[in-house]
Image (cartoon, rainbow, N blue to C red; front, side):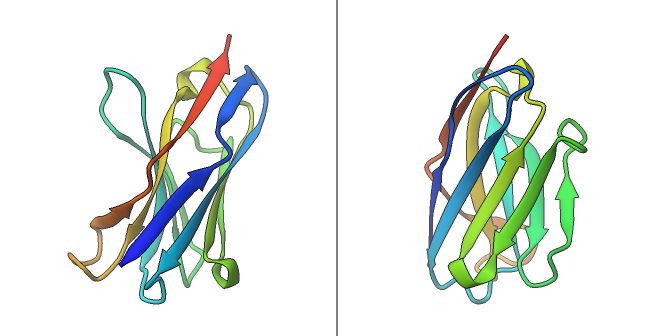
Length: 121
């Protein structure tokens, strides 16, 4: 089992920056990938970024590519999302998630509670 807790959300002006953190606990040793997703009111959940826990290989959604950077500290079991050049369209609840062997690779089995990011225009 993996427990995930996001933090770092808040209110920021357009063009500003914010850094989200996701603290993981439990059986994290076998985690394949960790990722960030977001969901705005009335919209479907959207993939933001992911990182291979061991490899460090990163993946980004088209809407955030070049602006957001995902990283992780394996020793601290912590996932980060550095968000720069924020736009009002980035306003959403941001969730971290873990892809583990529970349901196979490619499926995110554990999710955090979410942290609100609001970008003012």
